[in-house]
Image (cartoon, rainbow, N blue to C red; front, top):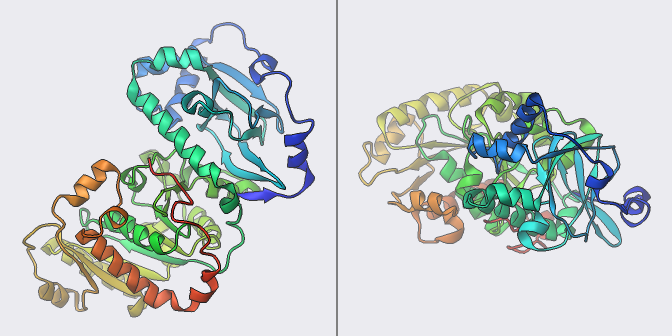
Length: 453
């Protein structure tokens, strides 16, 4: 997200770019869609994160009411401040979302295939918050408010999801001044990989909560990159609804990649930011070593800490990320199989060149009476446990149901205490040489990046 200081976007927003006729009247479509077109339209709806869970019959009913619109590159689709009664789905192409805030115009999002826009005026009863332009030649599917309400009128879940996305976007775009300063960075981020060699050890929970702890100290400067494949769900655990992900940026050209990457980040009202690796299992293959290296190169210039949930599998992508990390946190549960997996993982990490002082072991108690004591774990690992997280009863499960981050909402939680201890450790090792540099950058208030649903 960056201010556009050259004249082009300014002229587009304030001059001849303004439409005198609504986009659907400029590009009318007549006739009923053929069968193959119906199949293609249903596929577009299924790609939209807020609609993919709807029954097929509802998707078909909605597809019959869609109108295909072809828009040339550079053409305005919706205008800032205008009323709106149409929601658009991007079938093919990319669109740029821009807000005019004198003396500049700020790009706040770049949308691509499967994304939705235009939902704000209907769901939030506000004028269009931003202008949307076709960045490339685009094919859109449009549905008016009346038709959508007719189809979804009885499905409160779909409407609530749409409203959540609309509200999230509105609050995110509102702080465009702060977002526009993302490019003025002070130093590259410390990249922390969280690795759980045994499933069920709580790696995602700990990743999310240490990001919460760090973000309380550095609001707007801490990102969680969720690569716990095949089902990355950190955003959902935080009560956020992802509409795009890293995998869907694999084909974005170099020039708009940075904007597309930063606009894919979700913002939580407590300060942390989250980027999903994928939204569907079949998208995992798109997250290649080249893509993550490209993304980390940009993200490191934008944030103070990047915490990566590496999941449980060591893949080519994981190996590439290990080369980019400055610290590895290995999460293990005090169970025989988990400790054995952790022992093997430590041996692999050390042979791959991970320095001993940049590898920390976190012991996460998932039950009241652990099967293996801490001294026994340390003997098996042949190294000390750096942080032990006490059993937190039902709090983690309840937080997941409520979409809460314990390190932000519950200071008495054992997870919170463990996350704070890990944040202290990371700051002690990696924060000393940057404390002065980043002091000037703490102008973002704790609520500066809202997004909590």
